[in-house]
Length: 78
Ligand SMILES: [Ca+2]
Ligand SMILES: [Ca+2]
Image (tube, rainbow, N blue to C red; front, side):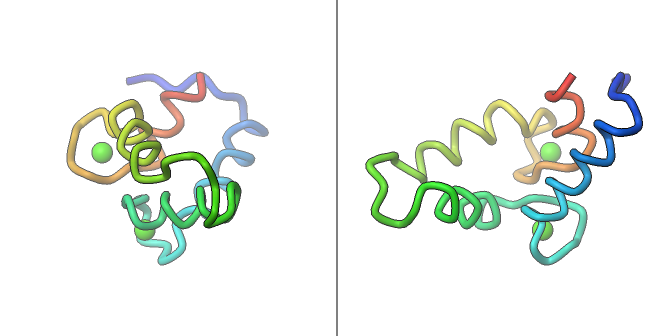
């Protein structure tokens, strides 16, 4: 899989990734994504956060291991 982001975009994306990846193990798990969405939408949102997490993972977690890596995120951002 080739990543065609320029250097600036890659840095921005890395920052974004680090923000979500709260334990900095290089992978975003469902709990971390859920916390991000709760931060954006608030806990009393009308959005169904669990459903959103599932659908984001379906789209982003291309190898289906239950984690989103930086490469998986970057390949979406093209
Ligand atoms: Ca993590
Ligand atoms: Ca994955």
